[in-house]
Length: 561
Image 1 (cartoon, rainbow, N blue to C red):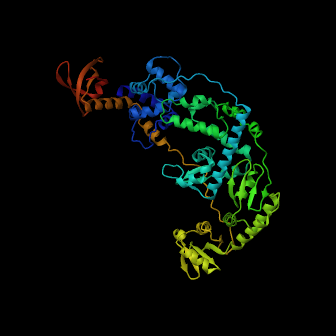
Image 2 (tube, rainbow, N blue to C red):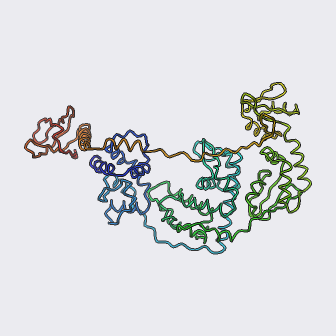
C-alpha cells in the first residue's frame, strides 16, 4: 500500500483546498477523522471502501476512462473531473488497489448514440395534463403542510398516516421530492415544513409554478446526466453512473419525476416545452400552457353545499376557498364541499361570517344558496362559545358561558394530552393557547383564540422551515490540520512511517544507506526493530544483525516475502 500512498500523498499536498474538499466529500470522509498528515489521508483513500465510493461517483465517460487505464484498451484523454477523484496517478495510470476494484466490476457499457424524438400532438396533450395534475398535487401537499407540518419517520420518509392522506395523489414521495427540489418544503426535526417561499408559489398561476419546479428539477440533476446547463437524452440515464449499485433506482425515480412534470412523455418522446430545459435555455411555458384551459375566477355554488369550478380556479381564490371547504376532486374542473368543521377552521384562522359571505358573493355565478347561508350562520353562532387565551403565568385558560361544554372538554379522552384541569369556573393548562385552540377545534368544539384583553385573534398552525437548511459539515479544520504537517520534514516523516510499517510486519526491505564517502549502498534486511533513531534487522546476504542510523537511510522499499 505504501508504494502507492506516497505519490498520492504528494498529489494531495499539491491540490487546492477546493479540490481536497470535493474529494473528501465524494469519498464520504468524516470531517472529524483522526488524520494527522497527508500520508494518513493517502493510505485511507487507497482502502477498498473509499475506492468503492470514488468509483460509484464516476459518470459513464469517467468510468470508461478509468477502465481503459486499467485494461490499456484506450489512450483517451481523461475528463478533467477525474483529477479531483484521486483514482488515477499523474500519468493517468490506476494504482494497484484501484485497478483491482475496477477489474472486479467488469467492462463498462458503451451505449449507442440516440436522438431525441418530438412527441406527437396527442402524446404531448397527455403530458401537459400530467404536468397540470402534478403541480396541483404539489399545491395540495403544500396546503396540507401549511395547516400542520407532516410527520416523518426515522428514515426521513413520510409516515404511513401522512401517505394515506395523499393516497389519491399518486406517489406522494415523488411529490415531496419535487417540492423539496424547488425549495418549497424542508424536513426539520422529524417534520416536513413549508418554507417562506412556498407562500408566493401558492399564489402564482400554473405557468410560473411549473417553471419554478421544472427549473429546480433541472438544477438538481446528478452530474452524470447533466449536459452543460441541461441534461442528456433520457435513454442515457440508466447507465449514467455504471458502478453505483443505487443508481438504477435513482435513475428510475428521475425519469418518473420528468414524466410527472411533462418533460418526458410516456413513450419516451419529448414534448416541445421540454427542449429549452434539456438544451440549457431559459424555461418557456407557452407551448405547455397552450394545451391547458384558461384559469377561471368564478364558480357555481349549489344547494347541496358544494362548489364547482368550471375550469382551473385562479390559485389565490383556490387557496382561500380550500381554507373553508373540503376539497373533493382536483382536475381541470374542481369541486369543493362546505362543512361545519371546515367553516369552523376558517373562523378559527381569522375569517368572519361577513367576510366569508362577501367572498362567496363575489366569486359565485349563482349567488349564495340558502342552505349554505344557514350553515355558515349556525357555525358562526357557535364559534366563540369556548374561549382560549393566555394567563399571566404563560399557561392557558379555557372558558365558556356554557358550563356543559366545559364539562365535556374536561372529561374528553382525546384532549388528555392538553392537561386541562378545573380551576373554579375555567379550565387551565400548561400547554400554549394556540395549541389548545387547535386541539379543541379538531375535536369539534367551537373554540376561538383570544389575547390577554379577550379580543379574538387568528390561530395560525403554520410553522415555517428555517430560511436555510442544515449546512454540510466543513472540511476546513481537517484540511488546515493536514496543511500544518506539510513542509520540509515530509520526506523524513514518510521514511519513519515506512520503517515503522516494515518493523510491525517484520518485512523484508531493501534500504539505501548513505556512506561516509558520499556514495550509497543497498542492504536487504529483515526489519526487526526501530527505536532511538536506529533501524535493526538481519542482513540476509551477510547473515548478521545490523543497526543503521535512520538519518543515513535515503530510501526503503518492501520486498515480497
